[in-house]
Image (cartoon, rainbow, N blue to C red; front, side):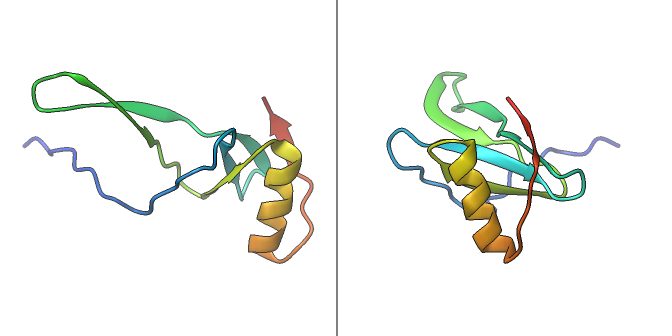
Length: 87
């Protein structure tokens, strides 16, 4: 019995020019760059669209740098955080 992998749209992130997408692991208190997957169409042609690979227990924000990403996360979580930054 084989299971078919299904892609589900969870949310859309449209970063401003120059911004990067960051991934914050809530349980481990780690902040890093988000991981992306390239997309291909039905003919196997690589598209210019990248999709964020969603990990469990993670929040995603877009920001100019790590310092601003921490500020955005503090606003979302409504508490002060000091994550370990992984570059």
